[in-house]
Image (cartoon, rainbow, N blue to C red):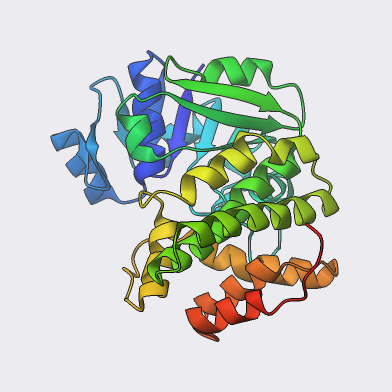
Length: 318
């Protein structure tokens, strides 16, 4: 079974490396022809300096090589996923499409799985998500992820698992995609907390209360509570809120410390925070941490004002 990864960023490259080393027939597609030439020549991707590209891994900018695969892993940013799918709907028809991004589309207000369903109705839509850093995957360190699909995904689980990637399957696509999207917002909040010097205790409180917000929104939108307690929710939340390998966390650190952040770095949680605030209004749900974080991102308030807003909330039972 042929597997292709769409997206030459760090995460897509890491997945391609892990699968190629496991002996799978895998192709890495990137849109930048110069980058492809460089990767083929050096067997390195500048976006993932610790990962050597195996000789067995085919790297191309030819879309036909991508579309020839049976399973396509979509490792594109959440905000560009819909455009890519709509532009290539005919070529992707009937394929197994696995989203590998985490976020909520700001225009359609949909998660990655629903975005695939709408753009390519005939595709078998799924999402691969959970606590994972590209550098760890590329180095062959053990990683456990959630594979969520509407229908039985036993064959897909076997096709994508490797000696170092252990996949757990679920049919709760809503819970899986929302867990991955919401934890990015919480990672930004925790970064702000640490960047502003508020301390580990404050961060622990943010993680805990942030997780409650994640569950509140996700279950309202139809997720199963147990899904949020698993890898795609609590597991991913724990990882990204405590490590500076997380781009969302580093982005928050910069906000909290009053520093600038590299504008070329994709921070999925920045757009997702705005989408979450809109969803909260639509469904009349109170999400104070998400709301404050969204305002921090757009510079409507500063870290100290955000802290005061959270601490001045009415006292209540946990």
